[in-house]
Length: 248
Ligand SMILES: NC(=O)c1ccc[n+]([C@@H]2O[C@H](COP(=O)([O-])OP(=O)(O)OC[C@H]3O[C@@H](n4cnc5c(N)ncnc54)[C@H](OP(=O)(O)O)[C@@H]3O)[C@@H](O)[C@H]2O)c1
Image (cartoon, rainbow, N blue to C red; front, side, top):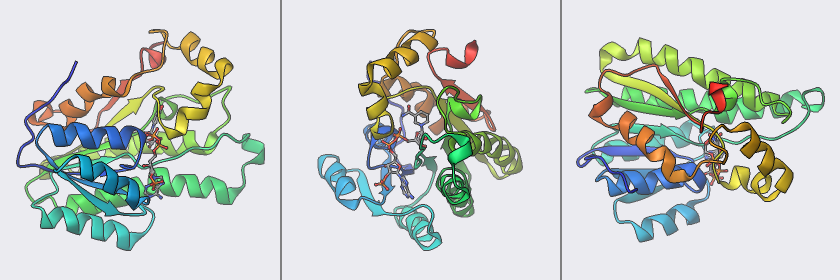
């Protein structure tokens, strides 16, 4: 099923746009009529994406660098936005908690949580007429990940969940809605290795009530709902798209 919404005249910023979920959302938003400022560190990948889709503007950006974030929002302003901001940049590493260095823990928080706040804050300052900010959290922000060992990632995504609630409430009267999507397991660079491992894949299938990982297009309904005026009275919410993972 190909879903679209009417986002013509809107300018969207998508971080984490060079692969996986962020890249998929760039195409979806562009297909829905938005101009999309696509941000990540690997500019050549963004360029390749933009070559195939005229509404996409590539922007090199390390979300942990304040100057890069400022330039990103500046680009969105030049194009007449931002109206919609998707925080999809992120990563996670599986290391037992007892062996995770404080530096590695902080690095995960910096990319997954602090940068989500930094992009949201810079974007909100550039949304005088309101807008929609969508953070990509995770089911691993709603529960732990055992037997997978990724304490830093779980902590960061748990932070994104409650940050979303707080910003949603704090900015509601400015017309800025802040919501999160908490995906279950979806194909991306982050999950490639896991899905290639038969044992890990069958663990995902066994523990997901629907019995399989998600397809990227199964995130489209949630993204279009939260990006468009269809969610004008929804803010501070976490929408799990997880085949029932968090239902049991
Ligand atoms: N796939 C899943 O099953 C799943 C489930 C739940 C949540 N998520 C979340 O979904 C989001 C997207 O992940 P994905 O699964 O699509 O993984 P992915 O394919 O590995 O994509 C991660 C993206 O984040 C970008 N990124 C990482 N560090 C960055 C930085 N410092 N500055 C700018 N961009 C950075 C990467 O771009 P560059 O390397 O080019 O900078 C890449 O575009 C993440 O927040 C992830 O935690 C994924």
